[in-house]
Image (cartoon, rainbow, N blue to C red):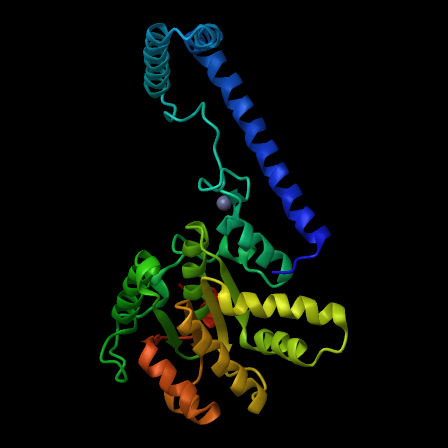
Length: 332
Ligand SMILES: [Zn+2]
């Protein structure tokens, strides 16, 4: 991925800031805990003097004494842990807390870019379109079944909107749990306002929290990027678009929201096929949401797109009222 040097440096600086912040927060926790539990500080002073001794002993190759020191150190750490718990603190209160445990907020694991670094690149490339701020509001914790009625059976699926949605949410959670092994794909069908985007965001949030790279694009924006990639005459724009295109093919999860709202033509159709097919080959998961029916997908795009979707995607039809109307009039 050809990132510009200044972009690369900007991401590295962000990691510096995160590590600085981690250290700052740790120092504050230590200060606070030592004031609340003076015995912790005494034990910490002991540890410091032990580690000075161990340095000297190591120099003289005194392994027996070194082993003893190790035991003492472990026992002091255990006493500290117990003290914290007794006073209602978490046991790791005096340890560094990382945003990404895998790379300890360095961005790298054995000189390879950590997934969090790849996501940082993706976020930078898709600046303005990324969904992180939305995900604070739209996730499984804020998801509510109250908008789905249990009062009638929807004939197209033979279930009430509520029972249907309960099943779908359960299957989405299973999709997330098995994300690593199964490389499943999802197609959300349903009218405007039944919660397709909200549910897609719930999934995006869970996967991002688990360290996967996720790109969310409306179909409109997706094809806009693809056109720039294909037709842009300016070198600068086409480099950016080439980076974006590579991420579209290679991110762990691609969400294409609102398929069918873009201006479709032979270009969009061929590009959509390329993306769907290439991601299947690479065993990368894709989620597509659309207001279109399956029949319309077939007629608006192409037989081969339709058949790829039918045979490789789990199809979930969401039914119900337009939630945005409920919210607008303040009901429920
Ligand atoms: Zn990481």
